[in-house]
Image (cartoon, rainbow, N blue to C red):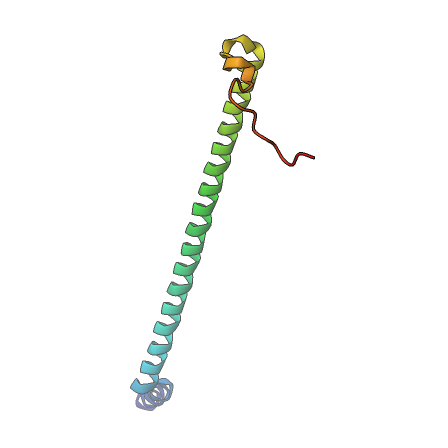
Length: 107
């Protein structure tokens, strides 16, 4: 009886075995899938890095713009507080001396 059961088990095992060729095909498929997943992950990581870099650049740009606006605003406030602080242009900013140049057409 034991010999018969052992023989049946051996036949069942032989029937469920995969041939070396089929196993190689399965291994190739697994390797291809694994490589595809690795490439997808690398692409996703690169896109995330690119998005983060773009966000950092945008943030730095906005901070620089805000600083420029603040500096300009502070300069206007300083000028408004003390307009005598700045030296006036000679002649009050008007041109002095020399011939008068024509502007546009004269009729």
